[in-house]
Image 1 (cartoon, rainbow, N blue to C red):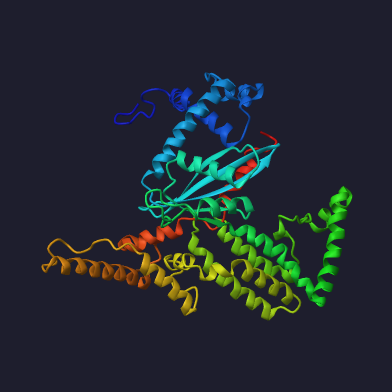
Image 2 (image 1 turned 60 degrees about the horizontal axis):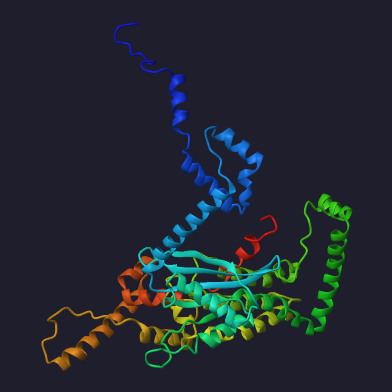
Length: 463
């Protein structure tokens, strides 16, 4: 070697370094057990999958030193982690002031189940958080008292009974009766008077929209011209749907010539039942529904502005449509019949005003805006704002002076919020009175979609 030259191969050889690096990346028994447990739980696999020869061979190939779990061990680990997970969920909701829930019940494999999810807005980050609280057996008939007992037990288990501001359910009569009997008639045990904010149920909007787009849309056939065009068009479509569903040869011809397969509509899949002439109207309805069924970036305050803008879009489509005016009219009448009361709801309107995305820009109706503003001013928290010693008069003057100062401070916060050009919800942190009321009104979800997937997935036939 030349003097001054550096040796690139000092120390252990490259091959040994690679072997050591590979050895360092091997997972421990504990971390591998956790990964296997996640695989089984998230994939909805049966516990016995860990004892199948193929799975054992796979794990031995990946981790030669891994000791396989039995199904009994796996079940015990999952039960232990379930207890830990519940503790984390309880801890996360412990300091939350307002919580909403969604609930649904269903039957699968001749067994009934009830599912409940919880939703809240984290006060510091203002991000929506969600958690699945329960998916358990529901024995007996789905009567209102059975549902009420199950819901109460789940809410009490997580210590959130007094924090719930709204429960979103489907339109089933048994759920409606639960809150009509046990919700609004609930009395304070101490004074025998109704509670100020009893747990109230709100029906999920997606079920009303299903009725609008199926039952109410059929009213368009009362127009003879629309009925003639609609029936002629759908008769041809029905022939194609029936032929392709009964004949694999016909389906192959469609796929070969059109490079696609026909979507066959169902009663619960009304979004697939539209033709090009009516597509604009149905698409506007489905867009609104998709907005409400989101779980993260959606709040109760989205409900009324979305309905208002949907009516505006349908009006524009009606003016530009030649054949589908009866369909659009039927949709608008259905919306008015099923959602009309929401457009002037004393809680839904202020919920929209207290969202930065909308505030007062979503409607020009002065009466609606006044309704919302009056509710906000009447329900904002009036926390004491003056500093000690700021009033030097009599006790009576100090008492009313503090009250006047509180009202002025709350009004100032509201005016600042409405006039702000900021687009981040963090602006609410500088207006605590506005923030508190916004959290209370906007914590609930407008749809119960968060609680529906478990019924279709958890107890699928593959489990």
